[in-house]
Length: 162
Image 1 (cartoon, one colour):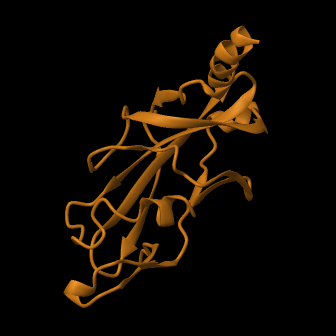
Image 2: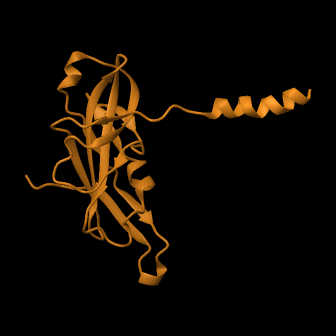
Image 3: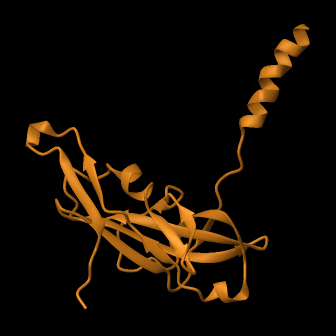
């Protein structure tokens, strides 16, 4: 019985270990999207697709802009990335982009070391050239910033003029 008390916590602890999250270098032309805050600055996401054991693997990075407001710099990642999605062929491929790696802002993200998520979607040859769609939510983020007179920041996808 004493041995069981000793080994049981070790066995349970071993069950809690998880494999490290996969990483990969982004290809030469990742899909990019940007979301902006009403206080200035925003978040850029770059992703591409890979094959992993016959399934689609999404790899990507995110960065904050240099002109980010002090209210949002380093802050509301969970509210924004956690509510964002990646679509392929009009269907959700990944929801909640917290697996993406944070990197410094750049003009291009080709070759950046990216965090990846293996999906349940079967890989098809056409996915090698597919362009996934990054979807940012429009969200209101409540901050504890009463000393500066603002407690709500809005975030949404950047709209480019046509």
